[in-house]
Length: 532
Image: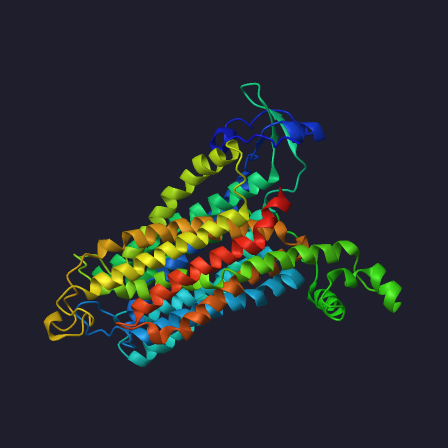
């Protein structure tokens, strides 16, 4: 059977309005070009809410490394708590691990009792309380270091809880806003007959989602400059301002937003299915009602469809597990790469602002991939499916870590302190970094940005489409668990987060991602073929 042709998404948006729609026939689905559907206003509302949350998250958390690592007397990079690099990196890793693990608890809460909308609102309330505490305890009037430390810990916990709730619910919440409709036949302004494709539409929505996230991430530029030029209190005032966007969107349009009711927790049934299959050599088919009735004369409270959906969900979970080392690599941008920048010639740029290059690349590359690369590959007959995109995400992440190792080697090759940056007498008390420009980090963040677009965007789309309807929040939370495990691994390898051992860490991560990419493609490439 001939594969249907595809049309680029930008061309489509203008084509789909004001034309009669009807369900497409089987022949039309097989033969006509497939396009993404038009996006309703309420989907854009959900996307803006997600962007606002990322704005406040990065504005609040980006200065943390400097805030915790350095003390107030440090003239080169002023801080507040003076806990040192290893402790500051551990706090960062612990925060991300805590955040991602808490997403599981919020997923259960959402699916079983509250629903995604109320869970989302509760999560934003926790975020607000954490940001408020962080702002108040960072004010210059608060001079007691113990109060600042207690306030910082409370803020980390509250923002971790809030972020965990948002991460568990926002991705499926956005997907819920696009109704599950059958393929539609549409005649364009040019008279072309096209068929809307839900898979292409969800891919488009989640690419826009990540594009909004990348734009919102640029808040770290303003946050880091406020930290350097005004003070930490000014940087921490920014995330509070984001709630002026979130609150009206969630309240004014709350009636228009699609709010699927909680369907009760499926975890007890899920656990029974796994238990019954484990007793029969982990064959999920053994948990089907017909098999249980025939072999054990037992009635179960689920049907064959539920078991089939669990199969799909577990397949998605296998894919998520492979992202653990990917997350470990990506987390280097929030701690060790910031420290690496601080060891170089900054030329007036805050060391924690350089990572803003990453979202800039994401903003640029996202539309280019969506407009040109993906449609071009489809027109050429190449199925660049989710597994293929994620494989290339691992490869580009390896490239990023390889560049990080190369940059670290360059830092050690330059004076005045060589393998002990900022730690020799010639550094003038830590004010003079080694003589290499911080801008040599640009290739690191280019590959990081490309890896994030190919990896995170695709994983969000894949986990939503493969998860059972009543388990989407739970499956999404398991995506965050893999990231949490990656953060926990970051704590385990933190002894390497010091000079000169960190060079070995970057090298090992680059090699690991090559191995993961190869194994991932060998094991999962058939999933793309099955989806087609």
